Length: 141
Image (cartoon, rainbow, N blue to C red; front, top):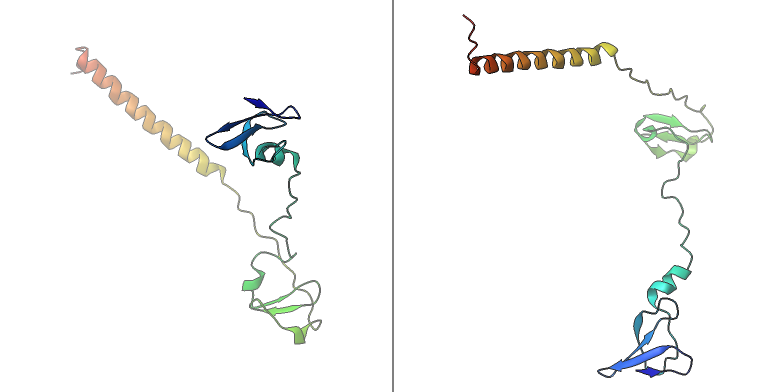
């Protein structure tokens, strides 16, 4: 083992020079004239994460606006079947969009399902008890 001038341990194996990383002390393959090294993992840890913009940006138009036969947004842009008509800009009033109707779950549906499953369980329990009684010799005449 050969200790280099500035205290970073290095060695050669089959003609290839290896040197310890400054931070984590892992061995890294280096060139012959390298004095010190920082491995790729330590280097990546020191770099800041890139700032990415959000992928989706809302246009402010309601869902399905491009399927409407005629849609006018707040700026006065007119669209026919999703295609903008620049000649008609500002000639029509903005389209009023109604919020979607919320479907309410009926309580009776849920209770009916629970009642049916309870009845099925009771039938299975009765059938199981009949089989146990038969095996134990308690035959009902």
